[in-house]
Image (cartoon, rainbow, N blue to C red; front, side, top):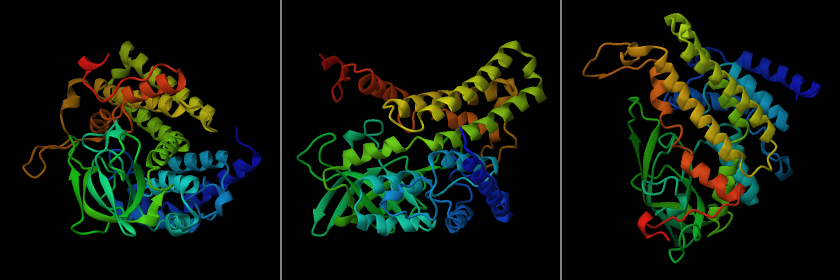
Length: 402
């Protein structure tokens, strides 16, 4: 798959990473990914600036819009960078939402003034973003959101609540999907607004403590928060089109990076099975081999669909990796047997329970088939948009459906 130029690029990327994943960045390791997004945020912000200074942010951005990053990167080179980054054990990205979600969306739907204002700061690793989509009553059913934004002269005032918002406490900006036309329903009348998070008294962030004992996600409350009217991406009322365009970009090269992390976790589970003797159990051994084979299939499927054009590819990818990762968490506990229920430290009032890495893996992966679009929603998308089956009726009790 990779050309001579790509391999030369690999050498450059590897050399840069070896020279920069040092000191506090090396000490942090690969921490900061899903399940540990709360770890070392200050160090990881410094790492973003390090990446920006080296020109490694924005490799996949469309250069036809002026090239806001420092260097171009073909699709193959983006894959190469992602692979080398994961193999180097570099810190989990704290700026991935701005680079991989906001930036491509601005390049596709934003105006030139919006690109000039926001993209250079992302490319330098200076401004962090969070995503204001899900709500308590509108998670997978995003079109049912209730956050509203009312036009007030040259600005909008936003009221409502978002939930499951990663990095909300650290982010400088949030892109918020809100209803700007109350006369419209469902996906009509929505707008995609860029909202500064530093608005005391108007924006409140409350961490959500999970069963892992940590708080990767947050609730965000908007009480008259202000967004400039010229910071509406794609125009007022076009939020659904922009939001769906963003979600289509949420999976891609990042899926391959994710799979490298999965391979490391699988190796850890296999190592545990060898240490405790569970590998001698033929059933567990077969399950471990099946996990290894399924991960290889996911990689080749991701490479096959990387260039786009397959309407169902993002949903298929989500179904594949969500189920795979959840099964891995279950397998991590199965190889340990009853010992898996015992924590690594004694109970104390200050720290009611402790978890080791595999226990955290098990607990966090319970959410894999729910967040980012539940399995049920992904299957509906495939059925309706790929197979052409009739749309499922929504918005009414099952008994009233005809």
